[in-house]
Length: 352
Image 1 (spheres, rainbow, N blue to C red):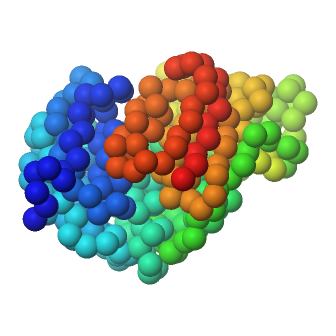
Image 2: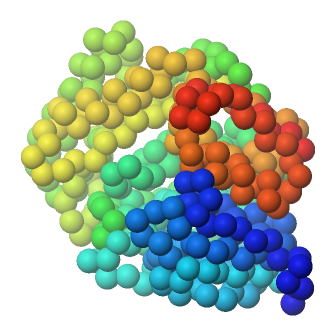
């Protein structure tokens, strides 16, 4: 048991004060084998205390690092996490104990947050978890599979996802499986995007008329044509306990990745949904940034672990990203230099 003096204290209300802070702190604790205590968990949000998503992530991370925990229960405002061994690979189904009426976990957020730790686990890992796979203002499966993971492969992190069952919304119980290879991570120098390689989109539907998805596909093609872009669009129907539609569009450059996404809601036309996703992508493409705002959060920890220096540019330095960078520095003296104002465009350099 570590002494009280060696436990890293984290203010869970610092900065954005949400779940990203918590997950970053726990992942860094496992990676550096330093115990931590998080006070005022999610203290900057409307829903303070540990929630189902946090506990789902924590369950897996504790197995990976054979950690002891104190306060690991729903609603807890403090959490102590004490890893007892070096992080190792696992093969497990991660339970997500929630009812469909609850605000359940986002399966992709849980898996994405575990990725950097599993990549350093030394062996092949295989895991799956339940929860939302497509949602509003949240990491979706199609973005995770087509933007997040291809970008991370450029840094040497190899992971392979599978959508077992789709889940639309935070009360849904879809399932995502993920296989992760032990990886030697290398830094990325992405100061300019270089050549545009491809623009793609996918319309994912479940238990709705096929014509609705086809209308979204047709509108995406029209929008791309009007913008002078060539786009490849797929329409995929997936298994789900509930109906839904989700649109994801993305672009890949020599040294850059970005995307846009939108989730269908009752009364929202398919064409409007396509427009929302395409405009989000096009707005990023209209900037010189090498990665989009959301990818910055997901690529930070892998690049912190990578050999060599990394540099990338973003269209917006969000409070969430800046908070996660602050958390990393509580565990390691790594240099994370951020140039630019909060909520404005910026350049990030990571150097050991």
